[in-house]
Length: 588
Ligand SMILES: *[C@@H]1O[C@H](CO)[C@@H](O)[C@H](O)[C@H]1NC(C)=O
Ligand SMILES: *[C@@H]1O[C@H](CO)[C@@H](O)[C@H](O)[C@H]1NC(C)=O
Ligand SMILES: *[C@@H]1O[C@H](CO)[C@@H](O)[C@H](O)[C@H]1NC(C)=O
Ligand SMILES: *[C@@H]1O[C@H](CO)[C@@H](O)[C@H](O)[C@H]1NC(C)=O
Ligand SMILES: *[C@@H]1O[C@H](CO)[C@@H](O)[C@H](O)[C@H]1NC(C)=O
Image 1 (cartoon, protein in one colour):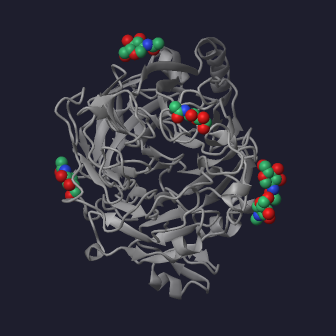
Image 2: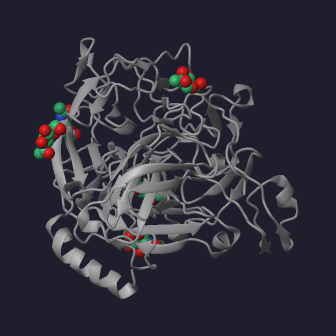
């Protein structure tokens, strides 16, 4: 289609169908527990985790439950039998599809056992309503090497989880008893945690370090800058102009405070990145949020976006802070190539300040910025001026969209987005669902159930429905259950009439991530190369080239035509073997 026709088509399309469909918030069901963490574990199920002492209405074994399976089809919660305390834990899914919940709190006076070394295992569940699927939680048998409350977890290139940081003991605000180390599940290094100079340096606002896994590759190029990204070998020759082709190296970016590093997991090397501009901090209790932007073939160059948080100093005693202090409206973006790092962070502003926002990658490549407060901080009853029990105030009720492909200064908009009246403050969770809408739950800046404050314990579950939920949608069928790296597979598609003339189809492979404390670890979107047959009924899709571009494990494939997106098809990417899995696919 030529450009003129395309423009004409888009005009007609927008004035008819899109005008009748819009974004909307819909409340449906109650979570029964406080959903302070959320993860999608199958096409029909999510898991929520809570604090064992909240005291929500959902019961198990004669007490309030603190874990629940959420049925995305019936919008009902079923209690899970959790043994240890999951308060402020994290988690992820391994290369064999098993969900692992990591860390938690030590408590007395609740039904839970000490959760700080928790490794709770939920095996892949094929029953649509979760019948027969249980959580294995026995800290005596399976546990971390260190006690970790407020750690982060991330699936890496070999399908294991990398577990970062945390605190040993309960703290009201700052990290005063830090766990300055990394460890893995299944364990590496003989089970001995790796000390981290970075976590040491980034105290005291460094809880829930924001991690993003990426592979930084440098293709044949002229390099003459004085930072290094990759192996020790590369490092030693880096300060001169060097011409080389790199091999594969696993890295992740980790962002406590305003500091960030690239960490080469295999070589155990930190590379210090430029600080976030303007003194903005983004880790708990100054929660901003981070996402890896969609990765595109052929180079899959990683770009990282950080939004919200605060520019307050972490040297100010908590009692001198106020729930009325403005949150940061800053979004900072960096490209993880030598040139991108040299250029540094690019800054742009959200439409409002946000403490505790989350960013959700959407299957069309946009990023939803949602939740949080316009003033204050994370955590409960610890700053000098609180709102009820909340360290934050002025909920942000209207989400925004960030378009990574738009020019700087034009990426963020809330045009067409609805406003809710449910505040999602501290201890909220959110996730894209396999159906392609957004699940929202939780919020409780109170220790127990409290219905009398401005920001009460929130049990209402809500969906944010994008326009494609109510339009005729493209469909994918015959998607293989398992796809090998660097392979091609054909699927059948149907494309509804109202988008039939759109020349471009986009295929996203997505990890839906794990939502805890305003951060969506492991979330990822990889664009897959796809060729539509001339009759527009078959799509030939290329899988990711290797396990560095998409860490092996489950994902969902969505097809977007025009602005209409299909339901996601559940796939296992890679062999589905337990971690650690060897490198797979094609190197480049
Ligand atoms: C809520 O979910 C149920 C079960 O899926 C569905 O039947 C009902 O239509 C939904 N209600 C709304 C308002 O979306
Ligand atoms: C904190 O507040 C106290 C009491 O108002 C004051 O004396 C002190 O200087 C403040 N400290 C800082 C670092 O702002
Ligand atoms: C800190 O953030 C506030 C609120 O966004 C802003 O008004 C102020 O200019 C910022 N200060 C600096 C030094 O960037
Ligand atoms: C709710 O929080 C308020 C403010 O701290 C407190 O006065 C009230 O007692 C709390 N209610 C319950 C049920 O804990
Ligand atoms: C997946 O791997 C983990 C870690 O080795 C193991 O605990 C779990 O039982 C495995 N599950 C399956 C289904 O292979």
